[in-house]
Image 1: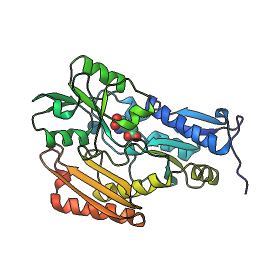
Image 2 (image 1 turned 60 degrees about the horizontal axis):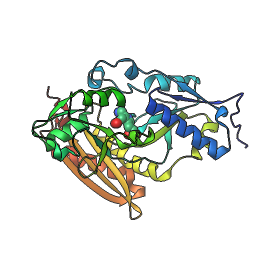
Image 3 (image 1 turned 30 degrees about the vertical axis):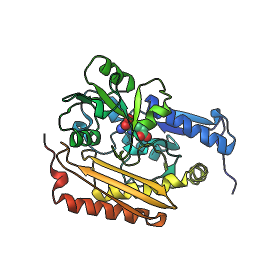
Length: 316
Ligand SMILES: NCc1[nH]cc(CCC(=O)O)c1CC(=O)O
């Protein structure tokens, strides 16, 4: 069967959020598909979709709650056939997709580390006692408070420019962003220091772009197969199995990272109380074929170390 490739008259519709980072991810997807099938940009149409998460900007994400805050509207349009594929930050994706959709194409992973961003200080260690830190990430908040009890954490939402302005205005001494986002946006002039994963374990799937498709569409299946990055697939299989077994929502501070090592996988995970008062971490090593089992077994180990009800505790 020959592929019925898209043309400028019948372009492949790529659905995405409209943030600068989301657009950069959509452009990378278009570039890789164009290179793999020798297609011009005009054979693709980038369709910007506004999600609930994009609409509500004045409240902490955990208050709006619900799964798929940044994905529901996009997945609805994919199911309806208004778009052909959807590009996502895998970090923001629930472990299960709606019936009829598949999320099994990943682009080569970017830098997985978090970055420390501050106009005044070089690292977390350099922050003075009692310094104020801005982040909207429950994981980063819990990890920071677990390591530096003296810090005060304030809610920080908005895009990179908004956050940098807040730092200039003295609202906080520093903030944190994924290196992947900064790199994809070409933010080379932002004063950033990468934090080693041994100091701050990143979120599950951080730095990975995933492309979702309809399960019954053989054309997008074949096209995405050509750009899928297998190593990233193995790593996310372990990390997402870990996340799935923990049954974590966006309200639970969870970190997880799998790396390829000596032909196998090395998986690390951490779960924390939201206020940082307790943290449990562990690791697994094994063959790539055991990726999912490693994730599940590490999750069970951490859950049993933390004790029953650990995730029911949400503090204030
Ligand atoms: N939750 C927002 C989000 N989703 C993905 C990224 C960064 C890019 C990535 O990790 O792939 C970010 C921003 C951030 O954490 O700095």
